[in-house]
Image (cartoon, rainbow, N blue to C red):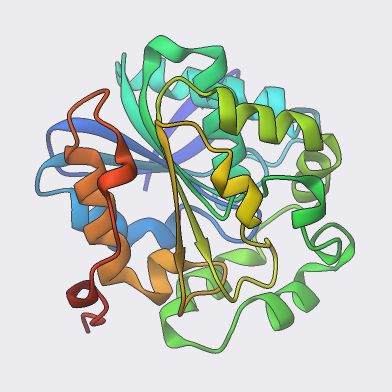
Length: 262
C-alpha cells in the first residue's frame, strides 16, 4: 500500500505502468480498488494512478475534509506530491464531478477528462444514494455479479458523512455548466441500467459542445469499468491516444469490444 501525507493526514494511492499520467477518481460507492482492471489496461502505455478520497477506502476519515473543495485540494496536493504537471483524469460519479471541477480550476493541468456516471443534473441522482445506509446501499445498488466484488469489499470502509457531504453541495446548474464549458476534451460514459445515476436525456446530448461526446454501455449499471471491462478499456485507450485537441466524436463502441475477458 502506497501513501502520502497531506496536512498531517494519510492519503492512500496505488500506481501502475510508465508513460503519460492518468489519474483515476472513484465514485460515492467504493474506492480506488475497482479501477484495477482499467489501470492494468492502460499501464502498458501510460502511468496509472488511483487514490482514495477523504473519507473513502484507506484514506483518512476527517469530517472537516469532506467538502468538494477539500477533495479538490486533496487532488491538487496529490499531483504536486507526484510531480504531475499535466494529466488525463478519469472520474466516476463523485470522481467525475471532481474531475470537471478541477479542470475548470486548473485547466493547464488537465489534458482530457473521461467522466463515468456523471449526473448531468441533480435530478439524475437517485435520492436514496444520500439517505440510504451503506449496508442497504450495497444490497440495491451493487449487483451480485462477481465482477463487482472489489466494490462490495470496499464500500463499508466509507464514512457515510463523506458521501452525504459531497452530495449536498452539488448544484444542478453548476454540473451542466461544467459539462458544456470544460475546455478539455470530454467523454461521458453511462450505464444504461445504472440504479444510481440516470443517463443523459437526448436534448442534453444534442447540446454538448464539439469537444464532448456521450456514450452509453447497454449492459452496464453503475460500474461499466467492471461490468463491461474489455469494452471500457478499449474505449479508454482510444480516448487517451487521441491527439490533444482532436475531437472525441469519432470514438464509437465497436461490436468486437463487447466480449468480456475472463
